[in-house]
Length: 225
Image 1 (cartoon, helix red, strand yellow):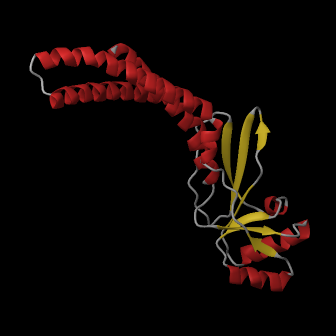
Image 2 (tube, one colour):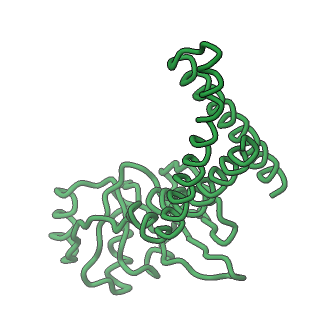
Image 3 (spheres, helix red, strand yellow):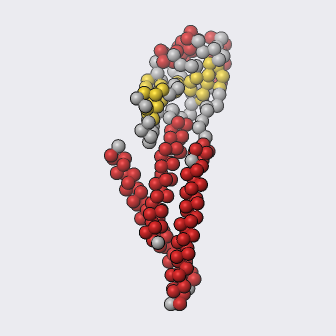
């Protein structure tokens, strides 16, 4: 029974690590691939001439500017291009999934003009109004569309349900098997508290063994990739 429980715990951790690696961490990267502390704006009439004039004014003000273009597929890899002005220092994020890639590049006028008019910057609303009065371009602030972490539960609902059901079944079998052992211990004078502590300690030891095996596998897999 101990071997069955140990195998189950290792499998459980593998499933959880897979869900984390393929879902939660990727969502975190998608929501935080750019620089921190910047406000999102969009240009209502994002024509080439408007974006060119806006870029010149932003550079004149030494503003920090970032654009993240829509992802494209290249050799079955989803690529995200993040463009930052020279005065932005951004920590490069690396996706766990091999089918995603984030490429960080320096922003220039051509890339800004070629964008859809969405950008991030450290300039405030007063400066945005000043640019509007100067260029006649309407720029509005918007909330960045972030991927919700709750989507992980929706996408992996069946996995979670199966995992919960299997957990209940295995724990029930383990508890049932302990009844006979505890009955023998009780005849030998073991107190209820001592039996509970022994069972808990045994379960924790198996959790530690399973976690160690899982961590070793992840390290080996990381070096191999």
